[in-house]
Image (cartoon, rainbow, N blue to C red; front, side, top):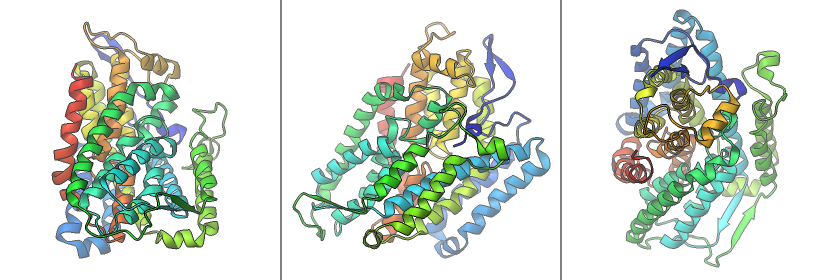
Length: 474
């Protein structure tokens, strides 16, 4: 995520008599909006991701890179030929994609060289403790880092008794909901930090909804795990210890996490390759890529072998998300425009549900930025001003009589963008990676549609409804 990737610029608008900077998507486009039909390639790609592995898996497995790149190229071509600032928009999207893939691929490769063996056999209590530990860890190394570190030992502990819900609840808890307490945990919160939200603002504001959600999710998981019985047995000894091979890679992991903060928005005056040389990547991405290469070349070979490490999961993520990033540009622009024009009429409830549901099918980071800009605009706050965003996070009175303070809006947007990322496999990058690693281990992994109708709708929607009723039904 470069400094330029979080710009929000545009002409002022009027909401209930208040000057409001328009909520422009994170690539900074302020020109004419694309036609609504240009969202079609994005919808087609989502439908093919959902139905391809189920109904025409041979075609999909062989040709999904062509489908993804072709649909993305179709949208890119329209922006080049038909949009006044199309090249600028595409450049910002390319920066977003390169930042995204540098982070997830470096974490994937580094964690692949860390072999963790939890010397316990899987059981409802042991699994629950691992999931809870993963939720806490995700706030320190990100949801991607925690997911990649723990999914393999989790699978080994439950060898012979693994069920689809084991994978799904790992995604719910470790890959999404767990990372809501710090800006390191999930990309939307880090973008908020770059815009001016204090680093430790998130923890006290989100802690109670986070704790309640984890308690409910783990409770449901333990009930399902108890019903699964003890069929099969892990090869792991049941001594209760933890064995770690490849400890050197924890140093690489620390370098990756530290490099996340190498941004001019965090360190004033920090050099920007984008501004100096007009490159689509920055020093952060160079460091992450270098660490990934060094980690792969120097990782403990036994650890790589024990993890059955290969590049297929990250390859699929890279190829599918290049299409997703490109095709979702018009959707994000149209959503951003709609949010900015209607922000004055949006309650906390609308911000919560719209931010959340769209984060489940779009990249949750730019979705967060769009709705943050809209909410800030409702309060007469300029999202481009760090000082204004700090005041917004601290809580200022609404211009609407009887409305809640601004920090409640920010809390709702923050929780929704992180939590709802678990709704689909594409809601957050670790979801896809966990799915692919589990599938390679021949675990029972639900397809896209089954994941949604069998698990996320019956489990997550009621949970999000409870969170809304208790905290944001205002």
